Amino acid sequence: MWEQLQQRIQLRLDQMRKHPELILLYSLAFVGYILTMKEANKQLGMIGILAVVAGTAFIPYLAARLRGARSIELPDEKDDGAAPLGFLRSSAEDDRPYLVRIPPSTAVAYDVIRKAQDVFQSDAIDPEEDMKAFFSDPYSLICLQDSDDNIFGFTDYYAFEKNHFKLFLQGDYGFDDLLANGLLAHPKARKAKVVYLATILNLSYLLDSMRSERRRQNGILVWATVSAILEYQEFPPEGIDLYGIGWDKGGAAILKMFDLEPAGRVMRGLAEGKWIYRRHGVQRQDLEAIRARYQKRYERWCELEIRRCADVAPSAAAAG
View 1: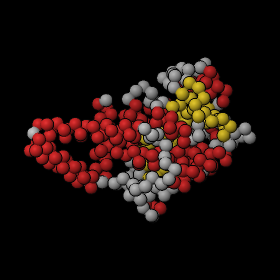
View 2: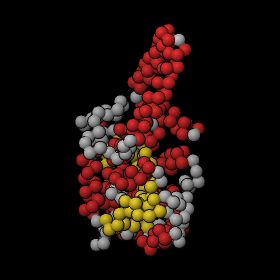
View 3: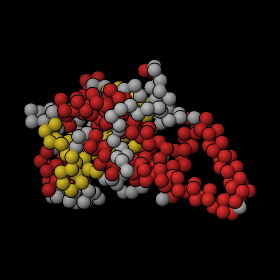
View 4: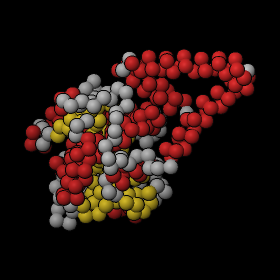
């Protein structure tokens, strides 16, 4: 709980540093709250103060309950509407607030792993193993940033050998066994028949006030991830299989944005009992339809740069 509070405070401070106007808004809100308390005390005494405090506590609770009545991660079919303060829409393409470059640099990969460690606070993140996976296939990490290199979220996917992944689904392998025996490195990864969406993390999940922006960021991550798979993966006649594990409600909602559906539960390891989401026999045109859906909504918000494998030297892909 303390770690989450620290992360919330850090995100608020980062917002204020980038957008000083937020300091004025928070200051005015605080002054207004104090004046309301004084007026309540003047008119009703202690009962008035208690009423203001109770209202202050109840309104966020009611808002959270109302938000919970609908899916909180799936984007609306229509436009997201006006952007929250600090994320003003620009008509100039080179002034779009977000940026995704694939493959990312080594420095960005290190930053991604550090942020994942801060969020998960567990043994689930092994920096050495994660960097080893990145160097073996740098094309599979998708990081959402802004022009100041601030990281807002990321996804990564693993390419697995199909028979080994089948052993994982059957419970004969734990996930560590699968990584050790079935993970494919570049260039073999490009011909993999199983693509596993491993981590989907949006750092804005900590801020309730960022809900609208969080939907936009999720849509951008899905668009960029599907675009990377289309660019780098080969599609055999029978298609490829897409998988992911729904660790929580938000993660499951994002997996559904890839048109994945529940197909069973994890039988071993840290994710035991969690739902496995799958789409079997995915063809190129299936992912092109998903890409078109999200590109139409979000390309005016994000500059997406995907370099072809032929344009990236093996050492340059890792070095950035």
